Amino acid sequence: MANVFLGLCLASAVAWRLRARSAGESFLGPFARMTPLHGPIGAFVLLSFLSCLFSTLPMRSLVQVKGFGTFLLVVFAAALLEDDKDVAAVVDVWRLTTLYLVLRGFIEWLSGADNLGERVTGGLSAYMTYAGLLLVFVPLLAGRGATRGRSAGARAADLALAAAGALAMVLSLTRGAYLGLGVAAIALALAARPRLALAAPVVLAAFFFMMPEPVRDRFVSSFDPTDVTMRDRLVMWKAGEAMVADHPLFGVGPSRVKVLYPVYRGSGWVNSWPGHLHNNIVMIAAETGIPSLLAYLWFVGAFFAAALRQVRAAPRGEPLRGVTLGAIGAMASVFAAGMFEYNFGDVEVLMATLVVATLPFAGRRRPAAAD
Image (cartoon, rainbow, N blue to C red; front, top):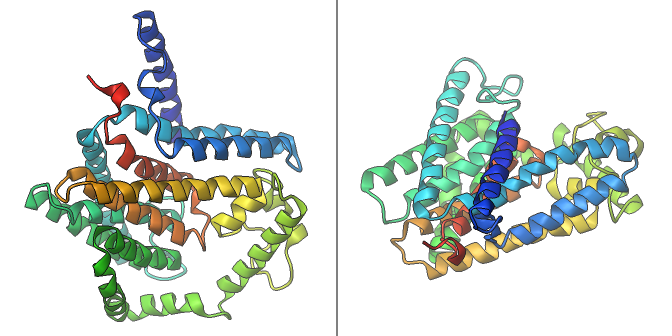
């Protein structure tokens, strides 16, 4: 449904700009606005398209081109969100989304989705997608709520919902989310006030010992080399390494990793036919090649470099500073969780991530958009 509406948005935008051109305006208009993310995202899409052409089976890979339209969200967010009020409206809508996810998750947990056999999904396709979306929304709300410049009630609502969302993530028993949540807390502290990072280990330790025993045991299993899922991930990563060795420039091609996995997997595997390799870096390199991976890392690095500059330059009471802090926490959490999960390929999480990453730059009106 989201992709259908994105397609309608694209069609209406073209019609809008054609009408604007007939009135003497520039065809691109607000779409000419650039952010630090346009370059790396454009490079990633281009290299992914080339990977389809050089795929181990091009006809199968080219079908995936339709999914590349998702990355237009960066372009649309930069074009259509002109100031901090537009950005605030988006975050307010996502606050309602987060409230729904939290309430739905709590109801499922109370109804028996409290074990590895039946886990909280929030009505989504998988528990990892549920935790992944909360990994985007929770730090965003926490960063905005912890920043001055808005009413006390609005800030309290953001912080309360962020705390409830963190609890819902914990109850999902998703280990990657635990890692992402911890990294988000440290990233927010470092970005807002570097000295607060000194207290991060104490806070994280207290949070660990306050966890319910099943949740704590689940977290500890992340570091157990005998854990079945961890062993399986190691097999997947080695298979991905072998794919990269055979196809370093363009990978095996989109949608080809799952099909070719039995050819590359070694001994000790558990899942004979996984959908992906449970690691953003390994999966991107194996599927679309090393240059594509470098474009992804460029996207991540460009975001953090530009967002941190904005945080340091912005007054402490500026509303957009809180959104930028929250976006830093969200990007850090998603990147960290992506070391154990292919969340860059989970379209629901990817859509939210692309828009959140663009918010700090879209919220500052460009000269081209000045009245």
